[in-house]
Image (cartoon, rainbow, N blue to C red; front, side, top):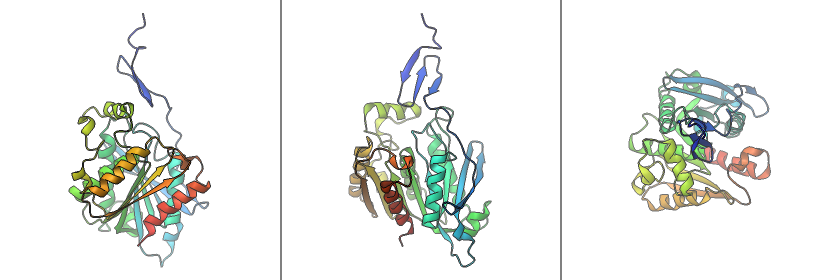
Length: 305
């Protein structure tokens, strides 16, 4: 008879749980790359520590153009990476490269948050860490925060929140908190969600999120299924939602789009679909035609006045 330490109690898409409580992630720790000065994209980056307990950090990207003495202050994108609330890192190559491209092309500062992941830090750590990081960004609005790049170059009247997959879900919760709690001295103009995760995709996906969040409120948890009253309070003027034709998350993103339009929220929402592609396809090759189209639309949302 197998001992309890090798018996599987539950198996999900990203990990399995043994009867002794151990969690085994199917994907090993992702490779991390250092910040860099990248002439290929035209952006440089640095890492900052936001909090030591709990551990929260971020990678900041700034375009070369910021060094121009005639350059006005730049819009700021607060970016939240995806990968199922339990995998990957803001310091991994897929998110580093994406943020570097966006920073250079949008002529914007990008702050990419490194938040706590399940199982070491179960949900809601991802939401709380991201909110703490967004407030850390806002602490620079008076020009006397701890990070000179933000003090000297960020335009806090043009802040955007963006994220993909799980990060799109977190971006929604952040926008709701901005609308209901506030973010002093900062104006969040828009929110960008790329292939966002929400509840209702399948019973298996719902169970996965609920398991990772021991303090969950069930299938109607507002972070999993945002109610109309939360949608109506999003603290921004514009929302851009990307979906992909072959993405298993497309139906819930479409539902979010329709629910937001009917919620009474006073802003404008746009939906963009990429045909023939699946979930998070653009990370496979940022230079392929459809990825370039997505990035161009992402960038234009940030640069649009």
